[in-house]
Every structure is written in C-alpha cells, then in structure tokens.
Length: 168
Length: 184
Image (cartoon, rainbow over all chains, first blue to last red; front, side, top):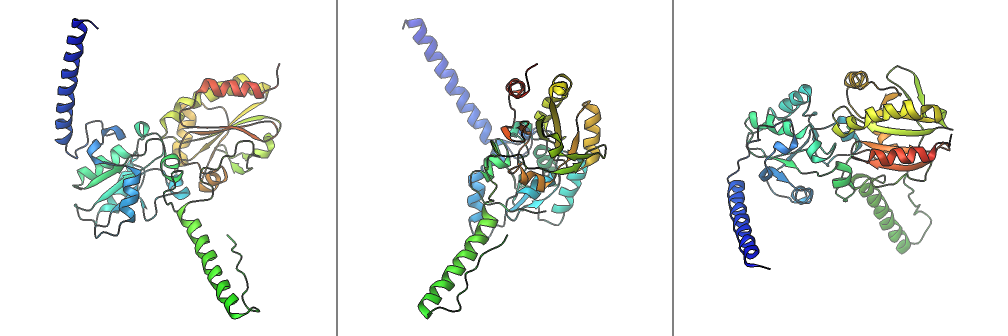
C-alpha cells in the first residue's frame, strides 16, 4: 500500500468518524416530530420506533403504565390476526380512518403511551402509519411510538411466535 | 373447535384425580393454543389442493374457484393501499390478454374494507379479470393473508404450485406461468 493510499484511507476514516459523531448527535437531538413526508412510515423518527420483541416484552410486563396499542391498517387484516388487547383505529391513509383514530383517542390523556402498528406491507410502502403518527402528534399526544414491522404482520409478528388474537 | 374431554366417572380415586388434572391440562392447552398462536400461522399450502371458495365479483357475477379447474389460475390477494400490488396488477392484466387464450385465468381478491375504493381501482388500473372482495375467512382459508401482495399459482388440477409474498419477481412468476400452460 503506498503512502498516498494510506493518507487517503486515513482521511476517509476521519471523515467517516466525524460523520458518525455528528449523525449520532443529530439523532439524539431528534424530537418525536414527524418529518414533512408524513405520507410514509419513513417520516416517523427512528427514536419513536419500537421493535416487535420490545413491544412483546412491554405487553407481558405488569407495570402500572398501561400501553395502548392501536392498529391503523386494514380491518380485514385486523380480523385475521391482531396483537392481543389492541384496538382497531382505522386506516391512517384514509380520512375516515384518521377520524376513527381521533375519536378512539379523544378521551385519553395526552401523555398516554400509545403504540401504533399496521404491518399491511413492507415498512417503506406502508401508507397508514405515517399519517396516523402525524395525526396523533397534531392532536397533542406526546408519547407515541410506532411498531417497526419490516415486512408484514404475518412474517414479523405471527411467524415469530408472538401472541395474536382473531376477530373484529 | 371441539375439545375431547375424557370421562372420569367409573374409575378409582387416584386415577380419577389424574384424569381430572389431565382434563384441566387439555382444556388449558386448547385455550392457550386458540389465543396465543393460530394453527394456520406459517402454514404452507404449496403442493396442496387450493381451498375452494365462492364469492360475487365486482360485477356481481358468481366467482367459483372450482369452475376454473382445467385452467392455470393466478390467485392474487391485494388492496388499494398496497403500493407493490398496484405495480403487479397492470402486468397481470397484460398476462390475461397474452396467456388467457392458452388457459391462464387471473383472479383478484381485494382485502380492502371499502368496495367503492376497489371499484375505482379496478377502473383506473384497467383490470380485465374477475375481482372479488375478500375477508378474514378467505384469508385464513389461504393460510393467513397477513401481508400483501400474496399470490398463489394454481395448476390445472387445482393444486397450488407456488406462493409469492411481497415484492416478488414478476419475470419469475411469468416463467412459472408459461411452464404450467400447455405448449402451443
């Protein structure tokens, strides 16, 4: 390896380190405010995501904080299988769905812990979570998370053996 | 679901106690099984007979899967809010034109809640094959349709030859369609 290559590699490493440090700083400073592209699940800040295993553990724990889990996708898919104790709150991609979400959460404290999930399709194609997350943010809820489902509810929740219920 | 409960009446006391405990265990096990993890989860239907169903399509025509025996059927579960579904469907419509005369039949099952949205999409996407509304019963019949799109390739004998979930390779599906159709 010649000197120029070593110098270039060193420079690359420094730039990468600085980028990583600033990236982390930026990430930690990130609020729970959705980005402007609220039509996509990608608009939800990564700090507000919860992984399936973490949610399963949370729901199994007997803490005093009662987490409310809302499904904001298709009612048909909800009827096939949903997270036990979760409530169907309407598809976030439709105005009627957002209205159902508003009425479902109307009586709740704004500090209520809420976990939204859908799982209709791969995360970057989900049309429901982004608008639902945005809606709860607009309504003033301060403790809203979104369940990160990479592929779909069948693959990332049911097939993993996490508990489910059926019915509407 | 029927649960077989053993009778404990005509047996001695220790055996009766064991029998009672076994009954409680069996009932508890059945209850746990029905609420914690469904039997249909991760069940593959490939190389099994395609479950039959009868529905009304969007034009109110009777859609009976058994009537398509003798044809290669591509059974596609989709929804209007599913972006990858909308990529696939115009291609399916093109295949219906190209391979329909050779025995291919595309059938769409929408997992939407609102039929009006499905009707609009049917028109916008220029679909030329029957589409019916699905529900949880049909989804469960096909092993749990919990992510879209999901497509089943059914051969002329009514047996499922392949299942595609998510953003599948359309070229791969087309190759398989061709392989199942009679050669010209």
